[in-house]
Amino acid sequence: MRWKEVLRWLVLLMLALGVIPSTPAYAAVTQNITVIATPFGNWTVSAPTGFTVTYVSDYEISLNWTNAPTSIGTMVRCSYGRPLTGITDGFEVYNGVANNTTHWVSQVGTLGILYYGAWSQAGDGSWGAVGDTEEGNFMSQSFLFVGLLALAFGLTVAAFKWKDILLSYSAALVWLAQGFWWLLGGITNFGLGDPWVNILVFVPFLMFFVVLLRLMSTEIQYEAEGQGMRTRYTTLGPEPKRRRGPTSYEAYAVELRRRTRG
Image 1 (cartoon, rainbow, N blue to C red):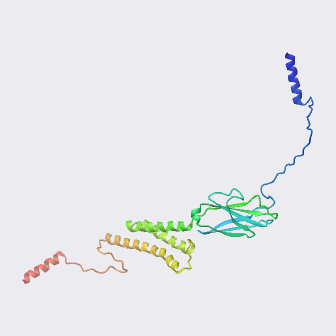
Image 2 (cartoon, one colour):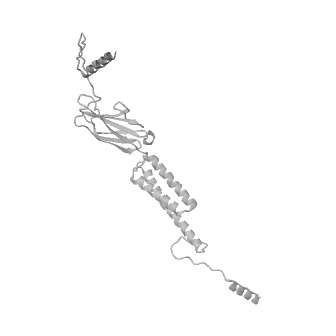
Image 3 (cartoon, rainbow, N blue to C red):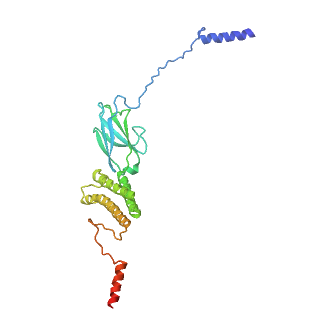
């Protein structure tokens, strides 16, 4: 019994080592199987280069790119709030042979982050497997403009109420920044060609001087009170002369003269 067990293990070991040749079993019919691997997209055409997304206004986004050398066109797609998962995701913004386009949106600040992708089209009509993607994380300049305007008004009210020098300087600087931003930055959807807009541009600069003049008036008042003056003087030049009342000795002399004459 023991030798049978040893012999069985020896046969299994020889089969494992290939010492004893095995006899293969063949099927009666031979069938050829062809495996075809289709890649995702066309790898012979490269993606567009230099793909840029530029904020123009709250309603206009400028898209620019350079077409691939072997492409016959470019397709640009976009999605709101999430990255594109592929060439079929999102919605189509442009499809043609140009190298730029404009994406008109409803309101930049309310749409969330804009995600763009650009793919090249090969000569056989297929699309490239790899595209160039860009993120348009823009803040609405109109919202920022309104926020800065509210900050300027808040600081101005606080400066007038508490008559604090730091609040006054802060309010004046915010008004000045607001004016230059409106004048040079091209913010909001107001056009500087309109006459009424040109008049409104001077309002922040006017408020800048109003806050500073209020601060100067307060400082003059405090200076006058510190010197024991009853009236503050805001005109240039020396202090105007005031009529001084009689002293007690002079009043006594006048009263004595009146009595003597009586």
